[in-house]
Image (cartoon, rainbow, N blue to C red; front, top):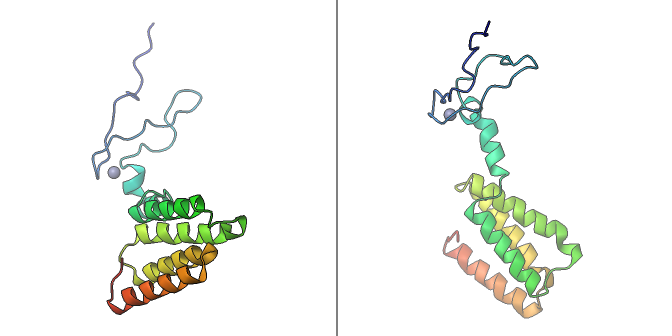
Length: 144
Ligand SMILES: [Zn+2]
């Protein structure tokens, strides 16, 4: 006798909140679904965790800009192994800004991290030029 078709595990289900397809249920060794069937995708079920995960994804515009800056400094020979922590600091700050672009404290931290990195291999003239540029930006209230 042919076994009745068990649960339609393959039927694509959609998230009740956003409508995106849900991943197939995990199956036990006997082929039965484990746990309660999901009704919402990971993102909608745990929005906070998903946001944190996204912020670690390193995909925002600020992070890209930071990577480009680091690449340029490295190409110009300005970075040495001793700068590693400053590199990491700038990347972390840029990632934080991307996840919360309107946070003034994060923006300030990001700028400080960038200045610290830029000055790591710079000449005195470059430091002066950069410092005065930053001072002008601060006076005009610009958050570039
Ligand atoms: Zn969803």
